[in-house]
Image 1 (cartoon, each protein chain N blue to C red):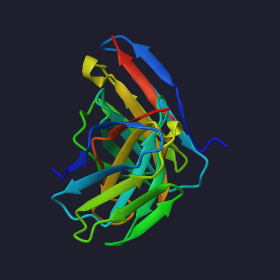
Image 2: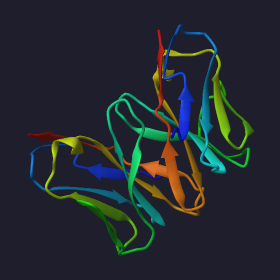
Image 3: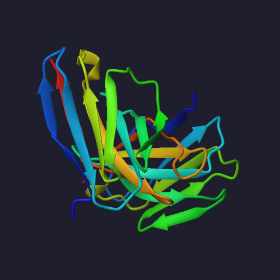
Image 4: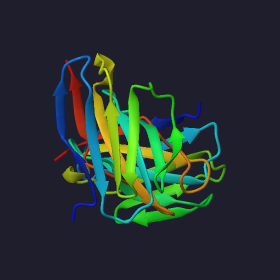
Length: 112
Length: 111
């Protein structure tokens, strides 16, 4: 079945550092999403990407939809302690109600 | 503003029991989902309903039966609970290009 490979699996960084994580797939996606999950809560949408090559920012977060439509990355600049959580990429192959496939998640820890 | 709500938040039960989880959304979305998050935090879709009709049904044991009485509600009934059913179950809803919004999750523990 379709899979998303997300890396790294976990990161432990110092406050103020920049962070980068990415997702790759053997399948082509028409939508890439990035979610963040805090402990004990549901995932919250950070950024949605709809076109190959699209680069979108949300505050200190920047994400890109890869040209090949098989990958995406998320960057976080100048990390702060509240960035701690699990970051998930997710991709959809068709339409708006097609199945959303999630990556395995990147656990981010930030040391003050 | 409670957008997607689930009840209960925690559910502890014995193997073999039957239980239900309820989900409600007040966003006016026409598509609702159930996802399962396992102990390794992997999120996998189970079911999706669009306007009360089942449109996605992943390889899920038929002990799991979703029911959508109306567009705003999607419930999940689980028969004969097994140890492996222990997980966090998330409800979500979406509409058009408005991407899925998740509920707070129901942590199910089967003893």
